[in-house]
Amino acid sequence: MIRLAIIVAILMAGLVIGPDITGRQGYVLVDAGNYTIETTVTVFLVAAVLFYLLLLFIEWLLGRLFGLSHRTRGWFMGRRRRKALSYTQSGMQALVAEDYATAEKMLVKGTRGNDLALLNYLNAAAAAQALGHDGKRDDYLRQAHEQSPGAGLAVGITQARLQYQQGQYEQALAGVRQLEQEYGSQPALLKLQKDVYLATGEWQSLLALLDTLDGKGLLDGEEKEALRLRAYAGWFDAAAKSDGSDGLIKVWQGLSRKDKYAAELLAPLCDRLIGLKAHKEAQQLLLEGLDKKTDPQLLACLTRLQLGDYHPLLSTLEKKAKKESLPELHSALGQLYLKDNKPREAEAHLQQAVALKPSARDYVLLAGLAEKRKDLAKANDYYRHSLALGTA
Image (cartoon, rainbow, N blue to C red; front, top):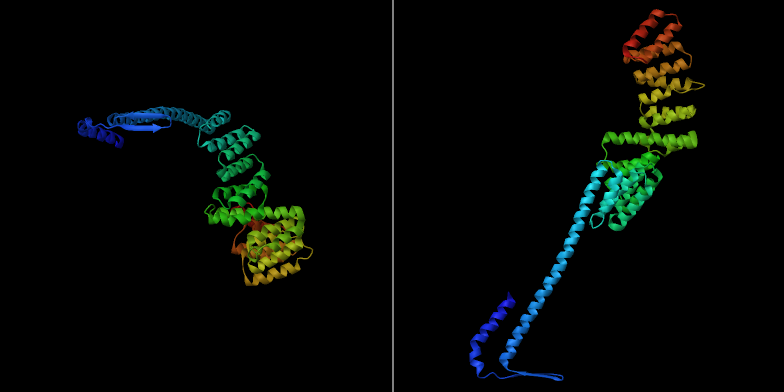
């Protein structure tokens, strides 16, 4: 627009002053090296305007030529993108349909000319694994990282998750630990860590992770408690298998004071001690726990003990029974007196137990005692009560 205005202004000036200077044209002399140009002012001005117009034409022509090249290049690039999108859509549809061979082929084709080729490579890796091609899976993941170096977390999580799904737990474990060092506590990584720790028996790592999962809202209270108990049970099993009763005692000693005497942890630990025939050690821990709180789980554990001398244990529980009249406590005393061959004391406590809280198991024990003393009517009565409550 500005250029056109300049040309019009020059032409208008020529029309206005042209006639006036026709008689006094003057001349212009241009001397450049061996060349000398001499002409009138009017001719010079017209030549200058024509030269300027020539420059504008050349500029326009070049613009058209380069514009055509740009549009041509843009058309080819757009065509490649459209093809990449089409291949990607076909690949994703095949992946959902579990046609993994087609999915892998289409997704790889869709990486050409695709600005989001990272996603194609990640999904192609999943398809390759489904086909049992672990080598190709790792190659696609490598290409994904090369395509998008800044997507290390996404690539790493995908690789560790695929390894976990493939049962390559040790590789997955190494992967999530490396990712944790590099990226910290990311929600997707935390959930994958939980699964990997469960699969590999990394119980202490899982216990340390639970509060973080809870803090980020990735676990509800019920699930957290279930995982906590499962982790401790796994830890106890591992310690018992590797180091026996000494290993279990060492684990117990390393617990916080609150956890040491928590019945939901102490009872399974003592169960494993009893399974290892460490009855004395289990008795000591159970009595310490009962001193804090008379819990039915600990009392049930006590009845499994096999001791040479039950007197100290019975004496301790009798003192407790004078302060706390609990059905589970009387039931435990009755069962322990039976083990100590004292049927009269056993029957007295069992009767107190069923009076406080009827139990099919306690009625069966009472029926057995009645049979031994030939009181069949009483025995039958106890059996009827037992059947009414359910099988012991």
